[in-house]
Length: 126
Image (cartoon, rainbow, N blue to C red; front, side):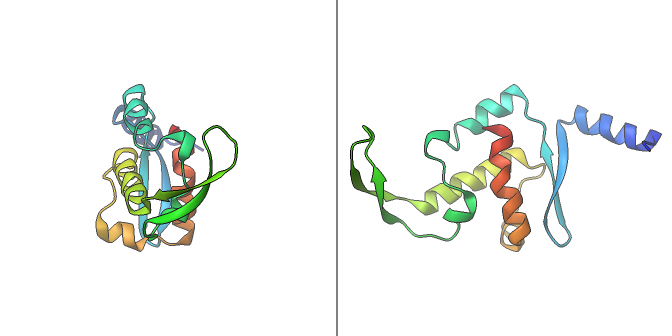
C-alpha cells in the first residue's frame, strides 16, 4: 500500500530525475537517474553498442590481443583491445547514470551481485 510519504518521495525523485535503487554491496545502494533525452545522448557516446564488452569481462584486464571477426565479416584478424580504457569508459558511464556516481572506495567494494547489476545497467540506456 502506497503511503503519502512514499508518493512524496517518488515525486521528489522524479523531480530530481532519480529512478530505481540498485544494491551494489552490503550497505551500498545507488539510485539510477531517469533516462532523459539529454542523459541518453551523453551516455550513448561513452559505450558504443556495436562493440560493447560486458563490464564484468573487462574489469581488471590488461590490454590484450584478441581474435576478432573482420569488419567485412570475412575471416578473423588480430586486434588490440585496451581493456583499461574500456573499464574507464564504464566508470564514466556509472558516474553519469548513478546518483552521486561511484567513489573509488565504493567501486572497489562492489560484490558479485553488484557486478551483475552494473552489467545490466547499460541496457537501460543504450
